[in-house]
Picture 1 (spheres, one colour):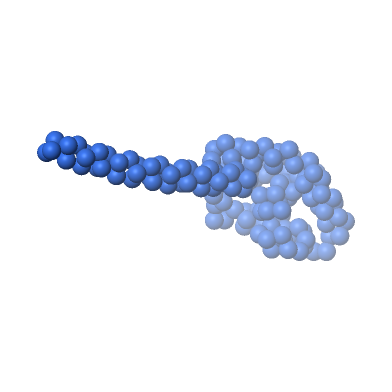
Picture 2: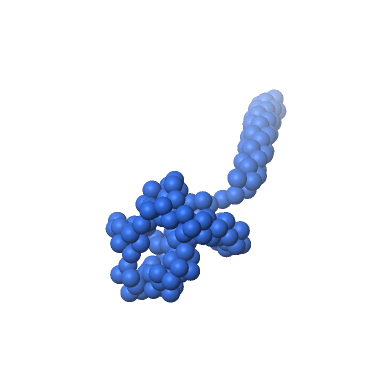
Length: 162
C-alpha cells in the first residue's frame, strides 16, 4: 500500500467518523477552494504541497505521520484501539474495493505512457533483437552484393580491353 492509498483510507475514515462530510469538505478545511486541486493531490496527479501533511495533522491531531508517510505503526495515535480496528477494517475493504479503480488507474497510466507493463517491455526487447538480427543479415547480403557488383564491373573492364 502506498501513500496515496493511505490518504484514501484516512479520508474514508474521516467521512465515516463524521469529522468531515466528504473529501471535498476535507479539501476545503485544508484551504483548497478548488475541489479538483485537492483531488489531484490525493490521486497523485500533482505534486504534494510542502505543508500538505501538516494541514492534515492540524485537522486530525492524532494522525500518525509515520503511518501516513511510510505505513509503519497505526493510522491514529493515542491508543485508540477501537478506532484503529475500524481503520484496519477500512484498509482491508479499501484494498479489495479499490482493485478495479487501481486497475483502471494502471490502464490509464499505460495509455498515457507513464508506465509500461513488464511483459510489453520483454516483447519489445525480443522484437528489437529480431530486428537487429535481420539488419545484420541484410548488411551481410549488401556486402556480398557490393563484392559481386565490383567483380562484374572488373570483368566488364577486362572484356572491353580484350
